[in-house]
Amino acid sequence: MGCKDASNKKTSTPNKETRIDTVAVQTTASETNEEEEKEKEEFKLTEENAIKFFFDYQKNLKVNKVKLTTSMGSFTIQLYDNVPYHKANFIYLTRQGYFNGTQFHRIVKDFIIQGGNADDEETANKRRKIGRYLLPPDTRKGYKHHRGTISMPSSEHDNPHKLASPYEFFIVVTKPGSYHLDGDFTPFGKVIQGMDVVDKINKVPVGKGDWPSQNVYIEKAEIIE
Image 1 (tube, rainbow, N blue to C red):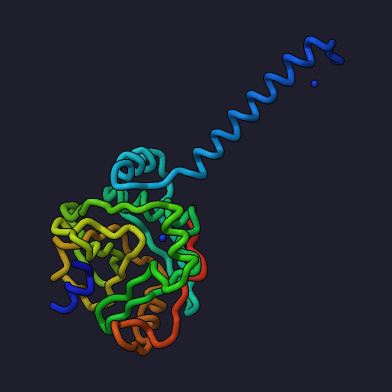
Image 2 (cartoon, helix red, strand yellow; image 1 turned 180 degrees about the horizontal axis):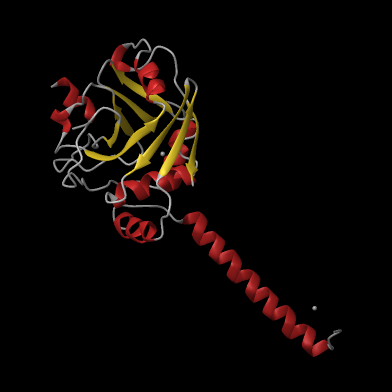
């Protein structure tokens, strides 16, 4: 069940012996560094490790604002500190550069704009590199789907518990809000600047499947200290 369904109803001179020992140490250190780098490169998020990863990741997070620069202007989002997994996920993906080059691929008039996806190979490659995982819903913090709320759609595949699809997000445009979404989706932040840009994106003509007739790109997502 995705958000779409709710609307329908990303060194001294050594001697010879010393030289041999030094080279051995240097080689060992080099091999160790290479192994560490390889581990970093090969690390992927999965269903098994994602929750522990984001639990540890969020412990030292001091930032909670992200600026999204789009092809139609920019706006700033403030993430809720007490929705830790979703906040950590969004910050992590921003730092990985995932959102750069993705699109607002679904626009429902006077309801939502949904972003974080694209129909290109680059976005698919980013997802493969970061990993495949879902996030548990976190709907009991008292946040509602007011206008300007950023929330996370649930995965549409075999997902009775409405686990969140981590690469996408939607922003509520409805005045004063879309409260029928409460309890089913996880609000994890709000637009604090540039809501006029969100409204402008929501007015773009759309075609089949609510895909905008003109591409609306997220050119850059960046952390604001």
